Length: 435
Image 1 (cartoon, rainbow, N blue to C red):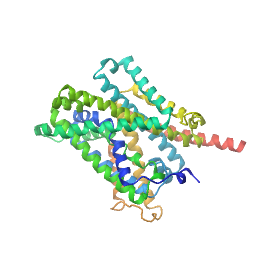
Image 2 (tube, rainbow, N blue to C red):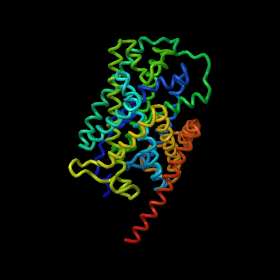
Image 3 (cartoon, rainbow, N blue to C red):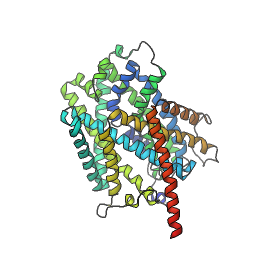
Image 4 (tube, rainbow, N blue to C red):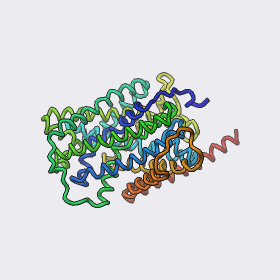
């Protein structure tokens, strides 16, 4: 009996959809309206429409695969089942280190930027580095102390992040100046692609809702309804946030630093409103970091148990029953990335890594569709191969807007991961023969 056979299938459409929204609505949306407006100006909404189209196509592929591959693992499991163990390991490296760790570091940068708005000393130099080490150290200790403590922190912090968004959309909508949303000329395709690549970071995360595939009830019904319903809500919410932020601030949105929503609240409610949004931003970022440090280190365990990573990464604390070595290792990697970079480059690194995973998932959906008969009742996207082909094309277009350095870095990561897999597999086979 494998691990999935011992799990309870209790996740329904509403739970899956709500979790998809929860995993996506993170710290990125607190900072990205200003970053996107800085590239496209009043035409920033175009990047949201491009990202919305891309995420809708890709998550439709996730919905189709999620009704065929019902074991735990999400994107990594889909890629491994379609293209083999080496592709699965490479996908794990790109997703866990290229996306999760970089996204975690970008969120850490937002947290420090929010705190620096009140305590400037933590915003740069040694103060910034020390603050990040302290944040990741505390969160690692909390998660090592037990899964319940880490889960409570993630849930409490997550609940607080919706407050500033609802505050901005509700109160800010009454102060929107339509002139701030008019754009005289259309931006270039290159500008839209650049802005979309940055913005895509905010749309990431919904795909993780299907990772616990072994616990989803009636996947053929739950996955498409929950995932696609959550996606529609997410697109509408983000478009509303951008329109309200830009409609209220206008050209001044670029002067709001990493906290445009706080600037909107300050205009509407004074310094108290700004303080509330900054506090909620800190709470939201802590929630994202806590949730990530709770979940991602556990993905090290099966890879270590397969022998592809050092066995110590699969060890469990004797007292707290948590993967303490994996938690410490992952926290150290994320912290190092956060100390070494600022939000925008980290967000682009995370986006590029996730886009590569999305491209592989679209190709997997195309491969699986024609590799054999579908299970009874499996969801099938309309239009034959149209959705996976369009999804792959859209994701490929976004990837085409990466810089040469970013593309070479991603290619090097894939190449090194594949080489490591081949060498490690030979070592394990040699040990097996010797034994």
